[in-house]
Image (cartoon, rainbow, N blue to C red):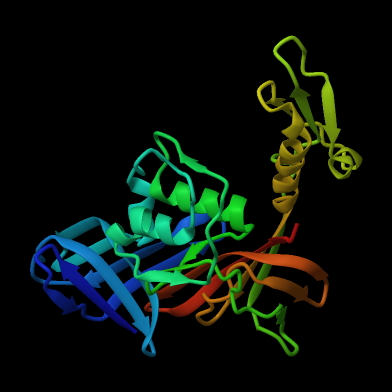
Length: 309
């Protein structure tokens, strides 16, 4: 494992052995998170970026959010908290304008290139439908919204700094099993009732009440009664799709499996998965989060599996 830091003057240095570190990736969180603690006797200059490689493969590259030096009990510890390169896109506001002939190449030049994104993986053409960037949208919101609406693809920023719109996460279906699959030492199953939505009540005009109902029969059968209200007065034709999305998102989180794998496993985020345990066999799952931990006791990756809907 090699951890390299760069200060605000552009000077690079390799960090000494890490005391502890975590790298967290989550499907619904655009930026990966790195946290590392190091024994360090001298006060470092202000740092701006961190990169982590494992066997010559980049597994994290990002910006330093917080740099903390602790001195006490005869030791000095440096803690770095960082987010991946997507963080700059989340924190910066996009220039409001209308793109008459939008394309990912045009948006890359405006929203990504100034923040160090190296290029685009995947191809798409130019669209004749205008695309409007509203005041207050972040650069990442622009890219995510455009790719979702025009390309039907969820974009990602790779650890080495490219926008990937290929739609291919290079992950085959993943089998978690202690008999011929990815092994794990612990498994926890959690049923989440509190965030399940049983009914979405929609309002289709300014003169109507919330009288249109979309029902989640699965939640109702489980005895759950949680209601959400949806004001669609300005877009009445979209109430069904919006209500279905609210219900689907709640279904994804209805059950969660947490596995502890005694090794690094970060490249499977978003892949479909099957869990084959002595007591539980469950397919139709998706890898929703990966969190790698390393300290003096060893290493492991916490994997979260949720329904693939």
